[in-house]
Length: 116
Length: 110
Image (cartoon, rainbow over the protein chains, first blue to last red):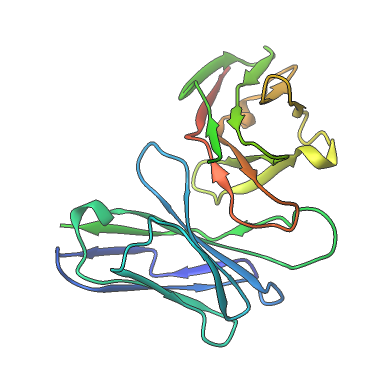
């Protein structure tokens, strides 16, 4: 499968614990996005990388959230001191940087987080 | 701030009937509009984008700047069209963040 992959697919944790998710984008894509989707809602933007640089962060990304993309390839999203409100599907997407109008974002399968 | 509204959470039609999924947006500039689709147990994927003026799987969408709408239409719905549909916009053509609507679950009955 050459698409975007995410690991783990499911994570159950207790409130107050830290969790880390990984995203592997399509290999030639230099843009990587994180979104969060809660039940009954559309995906909400969290943050965006171009290569290793984090270019944009949503106000949804509180100080408990941190994302990295150290070598411009895979990315990690860490949530510290999880709260029940963090329970959601966390989606990763990647896109190439090509000349011309909008470049399609390709989504991964998501990581479903449940905070007990 | 940019915002996308899909007024119908659920839409049910019969096979062969026309279908229209509504999308309205608010944005002060010139947005790029898209429809994404998620079939059961599959990933979110792009269905079509307004800038391409294309028809995909029989679906079309016209950007109406006066009404700030981007409704998705298909003249004859098929059972395989049953899915969750999300309208989305981005504020620039270089491909930054997507702002999604809440989604419409389309069910096409036999």
